Image (cartoon, rainbow, N blue to C red; front, top):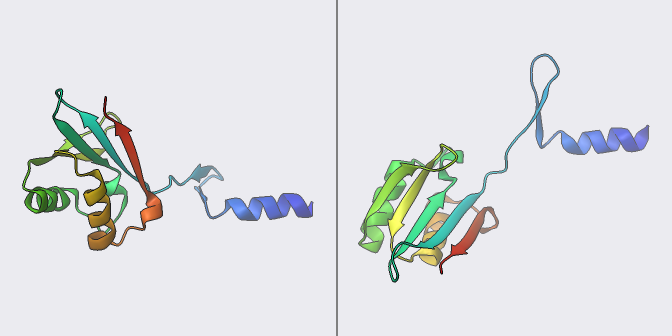
Length: 117
C-alpha cells in the first residue's frame, strides 16, 4: 500500500483532477523549433509551442523575429491546429537564444528539430 500511495503522490504534479473524479494529464510546455527546406537552398524556421506560455503573445513574437533577423515572419495554424511562427531563413539557433533571453523560457524546454534535406 505504501508503494502505491507513493507512486500516486508523484503523479499529482502531472495530472489534474476534474469534477467527477476524472484525471487529465497536463501537457508539458515545450517549444519546438523546426528547420526545413522550402526550395533547394531556401530554409524555413518554424517555431511551435509558444502559445502554451502565458507571458508570450505569438503575434508580437513573430513581429519581433521579423525585425531582429530582417526577414519575413508570419503566424499560421499548424497541423495540430495550434499557432506557430514561420520565419524565412535558417535562424534556429538564434531564435532559441532569443526566446530564452526575451521570454525567460528555460533552454531545457526548447527542442531543435532539423528536417533539412
